[in-house]
Length: 608
Image (cartoon, rainbow, N blue to C red; front, side, top):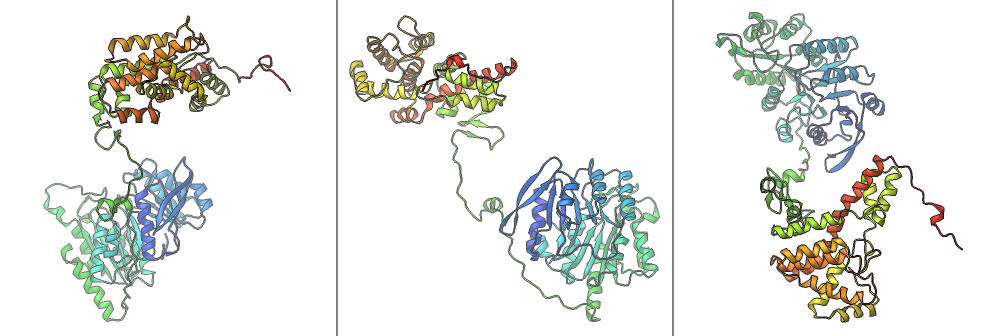
């Protein structure tokens, strides 16, 4: 066990098991104290490497993340404090690993519930190797104006109120982390404040004892008086009694052992800490308080008079000239996080994204205001979900069923079309699903599956302007533009596309109007008079029929219909549908374990 000061303004720590809030609180304390370098040198997150972004004052910094304790210690040889936020299951093993590192002097174990047998092994190793073990079940410790462990002393407001941003003259040690916060406040009210404070933890076997730290404080010149808060249960306080009797402590000690109320209960009572249970008269708070008093400590008659006893002892030291007045300083302002500032109404900030189609902030996600449970309970299909997320309204069933038919009919068109071919070649190259899918999707455009929007756009414009099929086709010819939605490499007048026929049959049966489809058929009749393969293809059929769906449903204005066509909604149907087939081709190639594809020489014309 160390015999003097264990922290300083240059102390740096390694933080095990990343927790954002306690690390940020440490960095905020550093900034408050005017430290030049952050006290957290590195973070250890088993299995992870990289950096974590945090704030040091107004500056955003990147703290290295290491996957092992050994790697972190090697990378940060000056970091000699190990702060362990591991769960009780792994706290002992990770703490022992840290204790075995030559660069680590102090280990603080935050977890409660660490098995006592494991703790005993840690204590034995730490004492044999002259290292300091704080905890388990501790909040940690603090040296005012220099360094703090994790959540010690709570919020920045509490730290400022307790004047912990600059050193005082009092050394304080307690079993309880919660009561430490209370005593920091009490001591700041009636003295010049804390120099160092330690919460040893409430377990039956603490890694370091009350007397260990009192003896340390006795060797620190800046500590002029010592305050101790014990509790019933165990016999830790008696080691302090012996130290006082043997004259090992030369500074005034003000002590109180809480738990005097235990005698009011008829049976044995277990208080909050594992060690806070009286195992007989000797472990009672009354017996400990009496022993400390007889050994020379200042012991008040009750906790309520503890503050007065501290004040009286401090004032006596001031009168004797052993404590000089501390110069008060104004600590810097800690910048408030934007999130908390917005929540408290102190600032307003613009949003970066606007979303009108979905909301995941409530108890369940909503699509266009419709809760997920409603979607399931009312038996909505894929077409209904598309109507909500794409069109922001619940379309009639004949509309959503038409959407589903389009998806089914366009899901795949065999392995030979460009999109499927690209996907197959990519899958056979050993690429992953997303890469294979995207390679196929990237072929979608004016020549492959991407003509639905253009077909709708041109058919609508011509039909709305009252152009005859002849005027429309010949006008496009003069502009050098092929009529989108017309023409097929395989299908012809005598070999019609079955998909087009199915879509037209459905529309004639269920749509209130098929005005635009009728116009597309007129255009097809004219183009077939020019060439046998200039038939209405599936792009043209979906484009014209979707216009009829939008106009006939009565749920869209003319401006909305124009916007839907312009934005590219209709091509979205083909992209969504064909993704199903492209994913299927990827799985098919991988299931068949097909080798890398190489195009055959005989299928290439080599020419100069």
